[in-house]
Image (cartoon, rainbow, N blue to C red; front, side):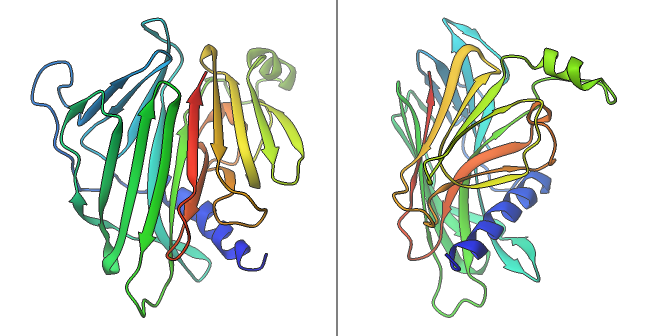
Length: 267
């Protein structure tokens, strides 16, 4: 368990750095015209649309029929290392595996190099079932500071509620919005969107209902044991109620660790 704690700290801090950092300068090729104009990839499923633009960030829009419902969420990845209890981002400097613009791709593969010759690969597998995300990291021998590659879903604000609104009114406005957490210990916890979460480790899955009408979101990890790096974690960048957004669920990997799968289903 002692080896798990630094990796958890790095994951939590890395998400903070990712959310605060400017977009990476490395760009993907995009369609010059047509339905996919400005996009590298467009995927239509029954319950969602997925788009990948020139930035390596996958945007997921839940839908009912052909109509979008609620706000989209993002799937992102980030690499960083710990120094003096701070997370230092490793800048993405190049891509060696670049997906060609595609409509309805079943798989999107990205690969390249961060600073200090840290190599990575991230794979998105798209289907009617949802999106499966897996990453891997390879560092040069003798590297001074070990890195962690995190991949996660990030969520935006669902309600613009004025400050000093009475708690009972906040509860009324966010009624029906819920996050259900399934821990590796076997514990199950339900959290309403008016409640505050900062960080929750050792999660096997998280289910979200409310932001997308009748659509629900289920996020699962493939971790098998408590304490593995691949076990899911939830963290709030703003450290406030869930309705304020900027909270994430994801997992991560490091050099020498098998990349765990993060499965995201729109139901």
